Image (cartoon, rainbow, N blue to C red; front, side, top):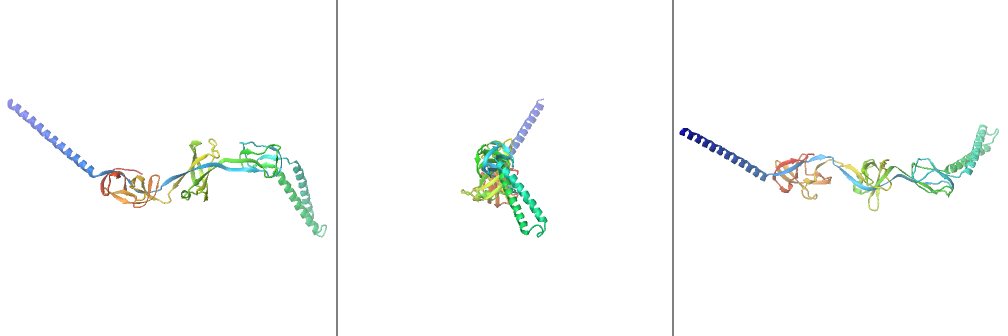
Length: 358
């Protein structure tokens, strides 16, 4: 029994020693792997990369401006006389051709009737003479006199008709009456202002562009316009005119047309912001601006080749919306370091820890 107990104790001791040995071997192996990983991390700098690619670059340009009416006219009287009455008040909408005021025209009415009768008589006389053969019952001179009388009668009638029509002062355009200058019973001369009419169903937005942006603006382009009057509303507009003559500050007038909104009407004189989205004329290789090391005058980037970051000079066309448009120096598909450059030098070994998607 004593011998058997000693054997059991020996077996247990051997097992414990063996287990401890294996455990020490595993610990040593794990420590070695950790050391190798640490050494590797010390020799390779983790970086994030992005692929250089050709792309259409769009960008926005914005200019402040002012809303003005689509049409604004001052109605001028083409006749003189006493204002018999008027039919408009400030703030009302009127349609083109509506009579907004009329002058006393009783005498003109009588004269017009007489002139019309004289014209009709001259017309009948001329027809009768023209049916007769010259030399029979009417001479050539009589026929010429009849034609002259007809022409004079017609001219007199049309002149009086024009004067009579002018006694009714009509709206030349549709719009809202912004000001009325006349009162009932007042005498006005020819050329006197009668009323101001503004058409705000459509509005114009006027902004002044610099020459650099002007060359990219074309009539018919779509724009978005915002105003502090309605902060949450964007108005759609179309470029209508682009001036080629600068003002004293060397800026150019650009005018967009905007459909007014009945629920949130634009008011003449309101300020706003016009935004125009543009696209580069040609495709360029683009990379994020953060890839560029140093200034844009002498730009460089790190290109990853076979696990090594190599510094390379590039030529930048321009930077738009945090994207650098590369003129030369890169090829499509090359991997460019986006972050981690601070730890890099030329020919530094790197490990890619992430890649930015397009």
